[in-house]
Length: 244
Image 1: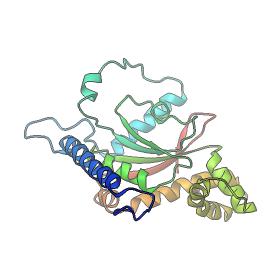
Image 2 (image 1 turned 120 degrees about the vertical axis):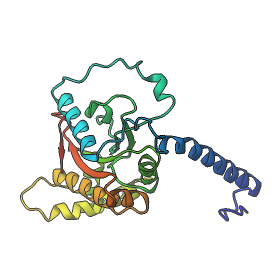
Image 3 (image 1 turned 60 degrees about the vertical axis):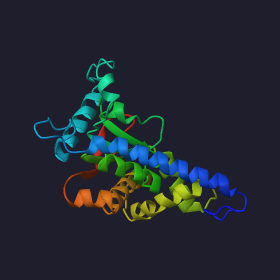
Image 4 (image 1 turned 180 degrees about the horizontal axis):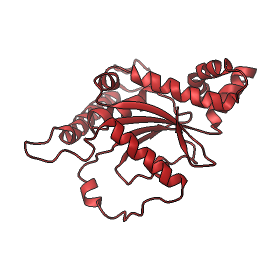
């Protein structure tokens, strides 16, 4: 019997070792990132991502314009590797879909180290992804969170189909789809539109709303105007991101 999880299949000594190792790793990880989050010493230059949320949004959206026009900035990817090995200063955290056609660094034409990206099918806020976004805010100083949905999203389409037919999905897919279904119901109230497109946009809005109230870290940073949280839909065919 495991003393930590009460699972009879777990061995107590192994569970304790795993728990202690995880705790030690957390302390080491936290100690390392805390240095990156410390305020600059008197007279030192501010970190590269110490910019207003509006300026961060302007940079990523200008990058999307370049991407959509097929005029991305030319980059020497070897430049800055030594600096990136020491710390990271992302100007934005991105919650995007896991779809293979969605690549945030390309979509927003940003260099390595500019974006802190987390991805999951349907670009939904889960506990683990929220923790990652909290890390970006608390320790990396990211001033902006962008939720990015996209056209022809398979996860959203599946949520619509299961809502309409009560179809059963295998594995853990029902848990993912359940998080999107409320957006289906909201989108269905709109008359005359495209249900898939409306649900994709509504899902983005719902995830943005959830993040704005996600205590303690993200909610407080948003309330204190240290960060902004916005949403957009990426059109795969045109390459353009439209804020919603």
